[in-house]
Image 1 (cartoon, rainbow over the protein chains, first blue to last red):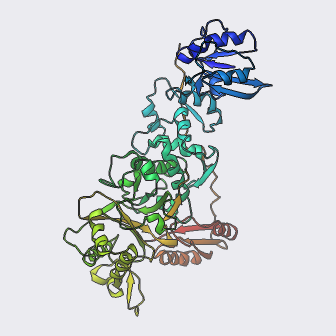
Image 2: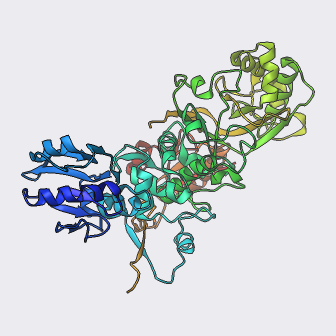
Amino acid sequence: MAFVKRDCPTCALVAPVLAQLAGRLALTVYTQDDPSFPDGVAARDDTSLELSWHYGIEAVPTLLRVEGGVETARVLGWQRGEWEALTGVAGLGAGLPAYRPGCGSLSVDPDRVPALRARHAGEGLRARRVELAAQEDEMEAMVARGWSDGLPVVPPTPERVLAMLEGTTRAQGEIVATVPPDLVPCSVEKVAINAVLAGCRPEYLPVVLAALEGACTDAFNAHGVLATTMGVGPVLIVNGPIRRALGMNAGINVFGQGHRANSTIGRALQLVIRNVGGGRPGEVDRATFGNPGKLGFCFAEDEEGSPWGPLSEDLGVPAGRSAVTLFAGEGPRTVVDQLSRDPESLCRSFAACLATVHHPKLVLAFDAILAIGPEHARVFREAGWSKARLRERLHALLQRPAAELRRGAGGMAEGLPLPEGFKGSLPKFRPDGLLIVHCGGGAGLFSCIIGGWASGDLGSRPVVREIRT
Amino acid sequence: MSEPPRVVLDPTGERRPPQRERAARLDSLRGRTVGLLDISKARGDVFLSQLEKHLRERGATVLRFAKPTFTKPAPIDLRQEIATRCHAVVEALAD
């Protein structure tokens, strides 16, 4: 068998060779662009590229030897010696150069691959196929079917979903997680469909898969994070080499708009919970206020500029590996301290602000992320402070006397139901309830706090998952 | 020639929860066992204790249950126990 196209100079060059062979062998020539090519050979029409796709043709001309239906040899381009060895015919192409590389096969043309993949690999897709009516606007159709989080979504055509699935080596039928609140087993394919809706590129899919695995653990408790009246949602922090590979933002406007991976990875997770798990606002999602991050909140840590190791390492993933950490968090709030130039002063500012997470009198109830900006981090770097020392100092500063925390203390009914005789002090956070990350733009003596939700076994614990690429 | 239909893939779980008949209402509380499930929110016990008093006055036997935490669905063993031991259940919270 030979695969050729007219639009390839090497194919034109070898046309006489094919004619020469056709008289001596059982040779079938398939033409990708013009069935009248090549002259002197009764070529078969493969303008549909069906056989080219089936045989995985990457370049033309490609010469195949097929015996008993099984391919036993393949040559790409024109190589006289190889062609002679494959065909067993000597003296091929007298007068031609010994070697000419071929051209790209139309079946690997990036513009044609999505449709070819959908036509030939689409049988493996198991999701229900939804035909849109002729007059339906496809963008409106997605929203009308309830598949959107309120923003437009990308229609998940088979072509786009198959392209998305190229982002992982995992089988499309593999179950990734059981998604709350409806506890629905969710396949890689369903994740890919929702990743398309969210606007992800295929290379983001491994992060979405890892995030979904992490979210659907008892420790993270995605059911509770969804159902709570508090305004939290999944916050995703990405560490490791994949941040750079995906072009993730860890710098200027790190929590804001403008970077596709940051904006769509967290959104894909939330769309899986909405569409597969059935978790919709006003139904199982009972948030009083919610927060804009519930559309999707994902960012990368600035590891290169950090004085310390990455967050994922604090949580047990070896340095240098890609990982995503899930945290049940509200929206970020800024800590402004433009005057502290020593760690102790800056720690006191951090502690004063961290103490107010959700309520100054509520302690040991909520975790928090402290996102330290580069200009604040510099203060600790120059003083030689480790992250452990910073955390230890913050915990010490965040001890509050029980008398201040008791219900009614300070003229506020809210507080802790402490026994009458209880004295001493209590810490604001659990020992591992304060996560420290380094990110943000290079200018601005600011840091940020992301308050958490009911912490520990009572509610949600931060969960880290390695990203398999 | 008409255009081929535009096809998208269903992003949902493709499952519809089965509609179940509600259990028959109790005609009387006398001699029946009523479970009170505290979801473990603050002061839920105060509310349920008041409810227990009223139920006992009407002749019901009352069993008290509690979820380990209000943030997660009740464990399946707990649901099973309530289903096998009670004729009715009241799940309640206070805050």
